[in-house]
Image 1: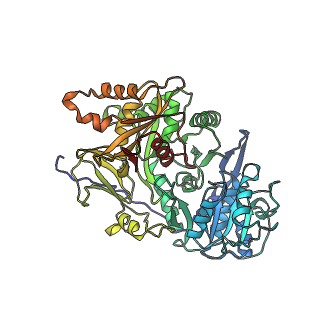
Image 2: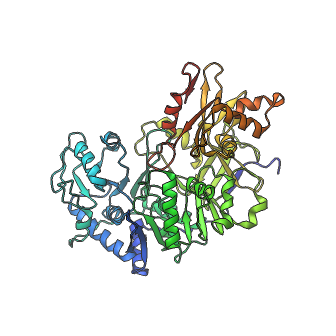
Image 3: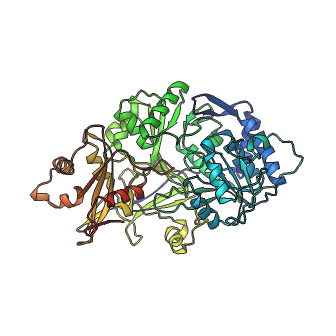
Length: 571
């Protein structure tokens, strides 16, 4: 195996129906009309259900209203809100009407980010949204849409293409009376347009963790492919499954693809982003899982790590986790929290890429500090050097992906050079993720290339240092970022650390801890430059993006304030 190349693929194929996403919902509504498609847990911890038939019928009525309002095939309709029935009714209604759902968050109180987004996608004709707490989002819409009329009509100088706004439900803080709740009950005798599976029906935004969020267009067929990929990655997942997934519907990991591919019941929090901290979110998650006892639960690595660290009570048949890097320490979930642990690697641009199921039988086979995964059907993966040439098995390099679910560029990115860099010849994509292929023909993802540290020609990835730091009993979480030494040009490690309450250590104490853990001495002094952060900054909690991911740009800004600007700079 020493000379084997880092190219892996799946021998399996997918039998994907050539239908639209609403047609898939229609099939479930006909086959399982009274089955609960969703169980929603509201802010008061009350549960409400929605059947497949109720969702399909309400979405169909809403779609006819949209057509009567002037929505035509290809129109972009912006959609924002929590995991509530109105979001689903609006999304499927938009697609049934021939439109395209543009999913976005309300992030800034003045709405300047929304204006920028809509101006970069100048065909946004309608906005459907949740009023928000105390009508907060209504205030933002008033600013960006020049105060819509009571019937939701818009005449905006900032956004001339925007003609109509619709609330999820009535708000005492807004005079707008046009709501999804009311419109989905109207009986309108109107034909819906015929939709082709190749029509664009969805635009999802990237998290913005590497800059401005970018819009990823998806045809109906691509949505079906995403659903089938996720279903294939969890082969025990079926129509009798109950699945806890509180990821927002507007994110790739939370979009209603799991349930539509299998006909299962999904349990979700209505407002999963309302918690003040990861600890509060974790406690709420454990409470819901404990009460409703789903067979499968999707838990992001930070929540899963928090559950394990705090020995919180939780038991479910299977846990799905993932994103990019997944520490092998999460394998402790097996038996303690679940019987099966699924690790998934995916991204907004192409959905699920690789997965793997772990059980107790895999205990002796785990040899890396990161967990590995295997390509899904219709997916090829290769690892190359900077020149695009395959590297040997076990050697680190750039990850390239070719998937049945194609990605041809962002809908709002005018940087053609970036698109050309990512969309390589013969369908290969590269998003600057680094990793390597193991001798067992599995992929280990180490992180983004621009996060790597480089000193004297040697490269170290953040997870390698984060792993050491979090072994300190006083540390709750750590993020390692590269910082440029302006004198040498080296990319050195810096560390942002969240300590447990009352356990904060000095920079020197943390540096000494790392030296001791790695046995750094005069004989291996290079490790000092590679692994021991020159800068260590303590945080009470990391700032986070709306996606729940740590806001690395926000962390960098805080870190920059704690360094000598003439010596160091963050990328």
